[in-house]
Length: 446
Image (tube, rainbow, N blue to C red; front, top):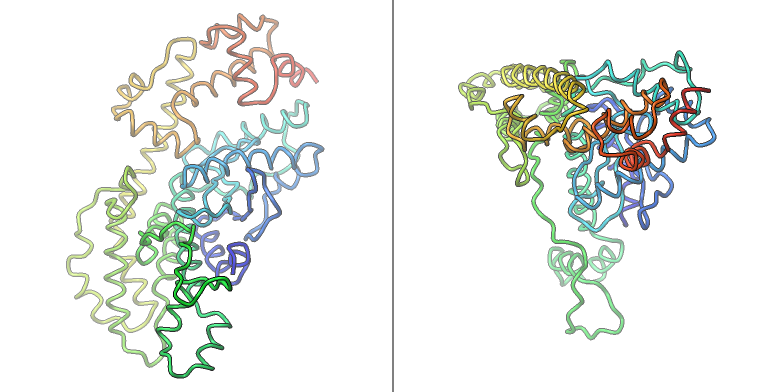
């Protein structure tokens, strides 16, 4: 079974549906050949009303596709999720479907709106639609109510968890006995099943080889251990949601294993293991090098947990016990998200007030009392941009408004937004808007 067949199969579909439910966004899977998107392999959920409308416009589908392709290439190159804002200003995430392999399938989550900045949704949608229609509207021709508000940390975490889960399932499916293996076992009873299965799983049949000739090594990268024990990363992401039902459902997905008549001891042990795994994930244990811990918490939820689960007998009781044990950590994560919302609002104000001046990452980080690397990670997680890219995007937005509402020259507009000259402004307009200064004026005048 190749990667495309696996990703279109029922096992992958169940994992995708679970991730879409936790992230509360549609998920699609596409293959990319030479950086270009092919037909959708699989997916879950339907697009928002805004996306349906955009696809009726002459250049709407191409704009969506270009936006996905650009960030899919970045996700495959980096080997990790890449948050981004699409051409309509909606938040999305691109991530490798089978990370740490040479496969070219990409997961796309979205659209959604980061819960930290809901006020930007209407403005960004209006700007994106104006670029596509070349028409100034006073109100949107579609509703934004079906675009969910999701904490900025949730969707990248869930996309990374889904990629690791799919890769684990795919590697397991590759080691399943094939029909030829089963036939060999049936026809040769003298060979043990383990020996024959290992032979077929670790070698390739080549009619030109002698029985003793070694086979060529596989080009697939060596598998590395999955770092997400007991779905802890998905649970941790769901904990950041203000909806307690999302958190409870994520826990339930890992604990809904009890069968009637089965001893409750394995279930009790699994509760302890799941809670411990979530705490480890929050503290950053087992995460990729360079990753930032989601929260720094003590191991207090484990204190007395074994005694607390001693009386549970059903999956529902197990879920309630785990939710109670993780409640302090969830409260801390929600407080951290509130702090992130204040940071994004304050950063937007800080940059807007200083657009005409020289802005630097070090000065901004010092202003907010953060290390520069932390501020950079926050911006990349929320906007998919570095500090320099974020400032450039804000300058382009201010320049567009000046070009549309005044008769100032391009050179004057460029200096007013802190750019060196008109050439620099034209370059940034092409990069962020795919347009020119004259097109920015015409878009507002029509």
